[in-house]
Length: 133
Figure 1 (spheres, rainbow, N blue to C red):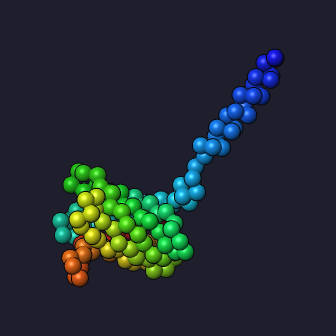
Figure 2 (cartoon, rainbow, N blue to C red):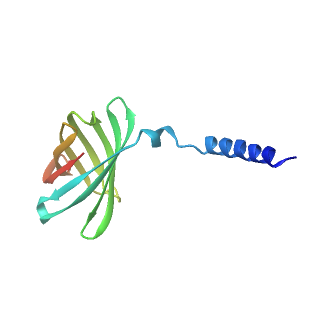
Figure 3 (cartoon, rainbow, N blue to C red):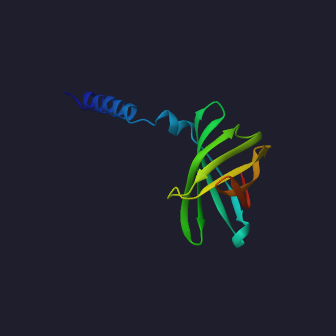
């Protein structure tokens, strides 16, 4: 068989392999926003990456990636609201699932500005602010 036949066969095989190994729907729909946080209790601040994965109508799994005291962290949980405009809030837990934080605020012109707080039983204590877009 000639070289063109083998090239065509190799191309078809690569297309088939690529289609079976393609990105999942969740990965396609994931939205990443970047911003900053201020930790008021410790006078600390830093960069923030927030990854949203849709779970329903205006419902999201959320992961906050940040560095605090020179250690990388990922706090994960859920959020409710439309990305980009209006009220938005959620709850996340630290990696060990021993600490719970809430965040709330709103998007205006694609920029979220809000506050975060640590939950202790039925009470919460303000811990600072965050922004992302």
